[in-house]
Length: 483
Image (cartoon, rainbow, N blue to C red):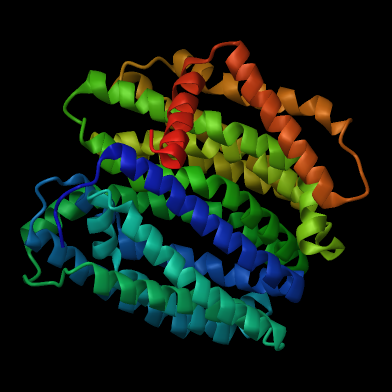
């Protein structure tokens, strides 16, 4: 295992490639499975996900970020993190196994007994490779992570499609998640030549826990509250409605995961390099934040405007009820990178105490809004979700004004201009593009919309757009012509 780190520029490029390729592959597999499975199948598997993501919070415990941030980490730090994660992973799986019957009774869904016990294996597998993943991330070796993620997604997706085609229903989705984790874990252990060589060290644990415990609490609060939607819909509204919601949320996550994944892979290790130089840190943070919003804002707007054509073309009319849900969810996608960047900044500056404080504030408001909006049904929940996402983004941005002397107003102006531009330029084309062919509508709107967006940024001479579009064009010329 080489300790040499990749350059920030290459890491950022590979992070984008990793997220884009992973999401495309996941998207293609999801399209095929959605045509073979029913909304109720996705609703049932969505219930298992609630308990899976909460278990994974305990396994990580913030140790991954602690290892990434610590530039002088030792073998004792790595081994201690591994032992702790492995033990917590084992305990989490045993609890899921034992309580699966009670969970199935509560949701009145017998299938959950076997499904939780199968999908729960992901918890153990996740605990085995957190250290290896942290090592590659800290080295900014996103290229290898890209290869590993794709190599695990493709075969597991093919198996899931085969099982779904042969009538295995929701079990196809369960096998897919477990097989993907198995392959990913094996590849990480093969590619990263690290093995635990030291004993559990109390001093290392105290450092890792001191940094990670606050992230654990904030992540736990976030996941508990973030899964309230699925919990309430699955318990009180219906499995099919949860399937529509899950599918719409999944489609929106394909959009947001590209940029948020980039932040998670590159944001913390890159910003950590400048943690002792506030001026340079501010410059890097500002550039990354604005660039992310410049990219994600038009993507979000495009999916809002073309939601119906996209859903009907990809999944057929049996998923038509997903359209309005997807539109409401995806319009908030643009806020994700803003919050993720702010959280990465606070982690890089070792201010996880702030993360915990603002998480408590956000989730307190979140719970109040959700339980008020729930009385208006699933669309009431979605409107409440939009409000909560806007509020969360604003709260996440607030500490930055003190940490970097980057005023709140300046942050809002920097990012909202791209959001306003993105949604305004698409509005006229909604009334122009209208044929009986969904794919044709998507392609025409895509060309007209993104051409208009880029033209507007060029007309107003947006510095960030001009700089990075020039870099992109020159890079393409170099690849094609060797100049």
